[in-house]
Amino acid sequence: MTQATTDAMTDAEDVFQHGTVLLSGIVGSTAYGLAGPDSDVDRLGMYAAPTLSLLGLHTARDSHVTSSPDVTFHEAAKLARLVLGGNPTASELLWLPDDLYELRTPLGDEAIGLRTAFLSARRVHDAYLGYATQQFRKLLSRDPTWTHRKIAKHARHLMRLVDQGHELYTTGNVTIRLRDPERYHAFGEQVAADPETARPFMAAAEERFATARSVLPTEPDSAAAEDWLLRVRKAFWEG
Image (tube, rainbow, N blue to C red; front, side, top):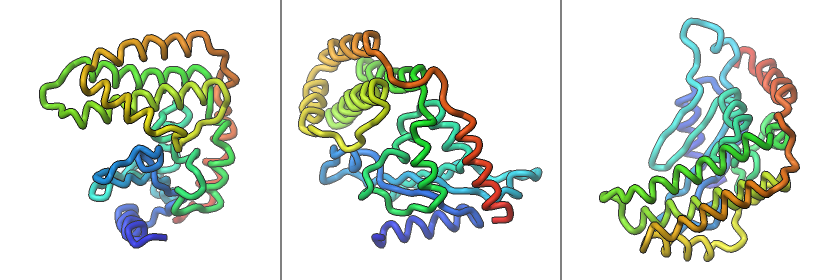
């Protein structure tokens, strides 16, 4: 474990008081293979709050976010709800390549093993294509405060969301580390020069999803997720 990771974990333990980190890894541009020399290293994790702390008048917070470095930790129930809803950012934690995990525990590994149980066709479709559509609308807004660099970054992530979402929708798996990063960088530069060039890509993306046949179930296996969460609650009854 790196010193930066150790420091982040120490900070997390201070914030969580008696909570316990179950899973943590490097996400974002570094994980995708899109990071440049000035890119931040983003970390995402999941922790278990002591079960008793969830029962009183003043319950534990369900997310903690810090910057410099950028670190986000979600409480186990919060992460499960986000992943069940198809949230692409939260879902990354369960699909990272092994070398990007910095902390794993048995209950964290159980969550990874259940990652396909969290999936459903409609939620994956709506979340990934919906997030990409939001990015597209931001690009077309031509916010005068946006730099060339920021526009290019949004365009890269628009393309990534479409490609990863379509893969997950049609195969039940998602590749976090992109196979051809230069394709995304080229698209970003093209859109930064003229945001309208993203329009044909989005039209094609909508067509790709509309004509695709999903291998995912209609609804996620919420019972499996609930069973896992109850094991977490039992394990951390008093913290």
